[in-house]
Image 1 (cartoon, rainbow, N blue to C red):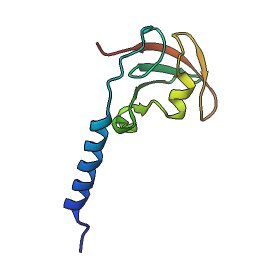
Image 2 (tube, helix red, strand yellow):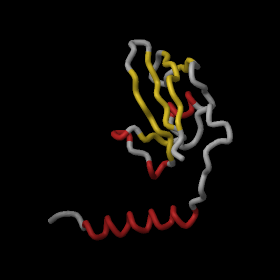
Image 3 (tube, one colour):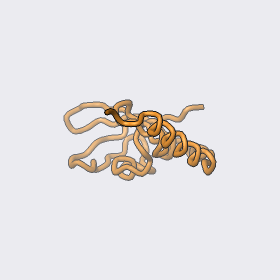
Image 4 (cartoon, rainbow, N blue to C red):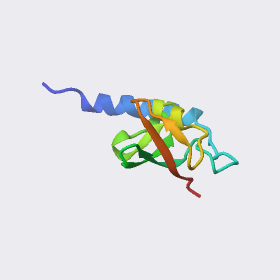
Length: 104
């Protein structure tokens, strides 16, 4: 017999409701030239590979879509960086910050 999918959905709904009850908006930093919460950041590693990430809350994180928690090791490494800065990657090696952007 399969798992109780209805129970799983109910548990997830309760979890999301609890998060929404305590959620507070987080405006982007006043200095949009630095990496902070909500930033979309393009990095270029030593091999020339470019990757784009967006730093979001834990519930919004979706690694497959490039949305990483602001508490992730990569976010910590790039936090407060500016375009042109070199950062040390958590997995080893370095990357350069190529672009920083914020939605509206």
